[in-house]
Picture 1 (tube, helix red, strand yellow):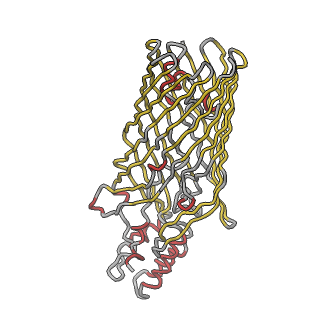
Picture 2 (picture 1 turned 60 degrees about the vertical axis):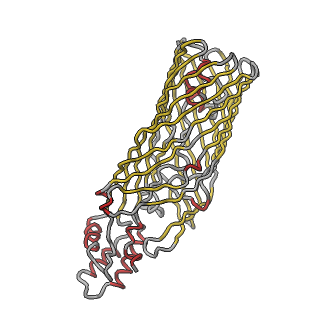
Length: 463
């Protein structure tokens, strides 16, 4: 019986900050137009991200570029005639690169970009609100880099990635159906002469919404990783490159939690029920989440990419990238509360992601000395297993198609524009967790779809 009554102890939200879809692939307007290829290409300052070894092949002493994207994404859930669609805010990742050629065989540079981020907003009281209502994730990576040309055909590069970030997440502490179940249970177990029994049961019966929403806020302090690469010219027309970006374990040291009740009556009821005892147990012993802080580790996956570029003529460049993403670092997510005197148990959530491969192809055509046209296509696998599918970020295999151009309105200045459309391949998925009343496993299942449209704008200048 104790398990029935201490149900709020099992309602603590786990912290699904990072999930499939949070790796942002719009870190260059030019390369977005080519399907995000670039590991085997010589991209000037933008090689800092794609392959640091390419930085030394800059054609000018100083190369600068910066840009921003606007991402409009949506996801849809459906099950047995019911459906819900996200109303996501516009995401705006950005990038900035600066490269300097010190000698013919040595270059250095620095970049600031947002390679990881996510924004998802389901309806506040949708069917899965006790799993997720809203999540907003932002990360910022500063990367100083050096690149050295060993021979005319072979170069190497390395950079240090310094990452920080922040996150906000909210979800209902329990579903409206479970809250009604609490009322029915109390109606059975409280004696008829218990003071206020009728008011307690009526307040719960008349409330058709989840009783409260928990919101977690956290800032991840600076963590470091590395980005290294090699680039080799097989011939004048063919180049091959390999790059590796290490995983980074972000750490939130003192995140904060808040509780928002659906209305004043329910808030007052929670306070009253916290004092009720049945067989020596308080049925609503609410953990003091909003009085404490928590810590958690959050993984950014490693990326290993093999890239090849082919220049059949002076006007054409074709490229292929195969990217291996180390998502298996995200095997679980554990949240620990710092203040032991509050007695809040740690939360352990299984994720069990699997490693994935993304295949990308792109083409660039030089129509004139001032106008470049680009297009690209890619396929990106989902790391989320079907039987562990939480709607915090609907993960599915994705197809992306892109187009872009660069125009030089004046000497040394380029204006870049790109568009990218991503279509998720719809999939069924389920997520199992314990019911807060019965403590039995219950499954939230359904069919998911997703799509996204991205518009990118950038400027590049060299001298």
